Length: 110
Image (cartoon, rainbow, N blue to C red; front, side):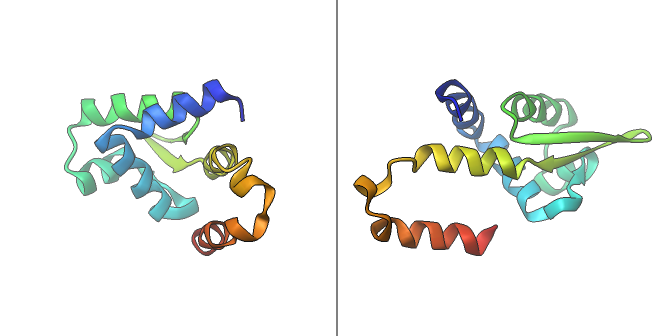
């Protein structure tokens, strides 16, 4: 991952509601959720939700697909894995055993 994309993704996640949206979509799994479900679950106003989903999409953290009149959103786990890889690229000075707990935690969640 390039530094500029990492900064864009981190900036997008540095907002309370966008972080909540991303975490909600992670919990939703591969099926994702339509905008109305996200709004209801997070008590978000539609226009605010739309703006935040747009920021997350531009950061490549969220993908979407049209389903008739609805748009279904999914967390883009490939981008998140790339971001985490970027952040931990030179972890622990090359001693992989020191980073094992962090990588084990990632394996459990994903």
